Length: 371
Ligand SMILES: Nc1ncnc2c1ncn2[C@@H]1O[C@H](COP(=O)(O)OP(=O)(O)O)[C@@H](O)[C@H]1O
Ligand SMILES: [Mg+2]
Image (cartoon, rainbow, N blue to C red):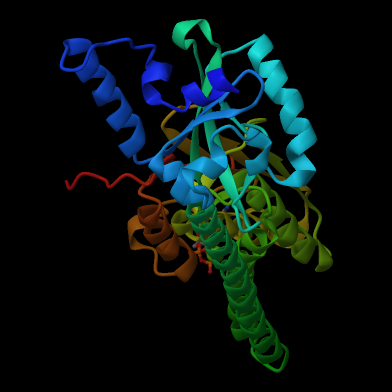
């Protein structure tokens, strides 16, 4: 016990035999003060697990007087259910000492004098004063950090629940609009009005689908983007089944790269609406009279690093001769350039054979420099 209690003196830990007033005595005093006043709880424990030194912060954190700690087993500070494991890992540490944080892979707890527990993070370092191997342990009470972390996790969880709820509600509201337009179309005597209403239904359904996908996604909470290939797959399928339900026989293929192409939320709806207009037009105008079986090809190309290329092409009759895209007065092709602008993209049109439309837009929503 004599040797152990002498470790309680910081001079002994420092291995100093300095005479008072010498440089060595001064540095020993500095060392003692630094350890004692350090803002973290510091403990020095010998190879048998005895506490050799506890600084002021350690006494405050654990609620013990110095005499109650020094000389006692360090397991006094470990919750009983972990004490056995602690002895084991302490022995292991002395066999193979490396400076390391304890509790890297699991939660660690310490016990105060009053029996209450608190979560800790512990840094260990082997010291060797005067040939006595000991471990210096810096103990940090992480109660507040864990509380903050939990608050943040709950807040993020709440936000994403709320966001999902919003997607769901927007989707439901849009579906109400779809039902109203359908009812109106069904009760209309005028074929042209019916068709106009049906086309509006398709537009709103293209928007419903983005919200549907946002609501369904469970993978990435990182950024608000949608998987463009998946969106276009479902959108074209939706348009095709509505078209076929009317007894038409047209094929549609969607070609897309293996690697996912993600598009920011802001531009997902304009992008869906462009494809909606162009595919609807191909169905409606490219194969008049339904006399022959046609093909519509939608291609999504994400090969370029900075741009996405999307095209809709058919093998039908082609655009009318003298077709002037700039001066079209019908809604669909007036909408397309506006939507392409929202995509911050460019549109090129070709015809004969068939009609083909190609939209190129930047992968990221960078502002286009003003002309
Ligand atoms: N894929 C196509 N093949 C042939 N003609 C087309 C095609 N797409 C558009 N058009 C022509 O362009 C015109 C304008 O299209 P749009 O503005 O969508 O109006 P709408 O579809 O209401 O007629 C169509 O009426 C049609 O003559
Ligand atoms: Mg149209």
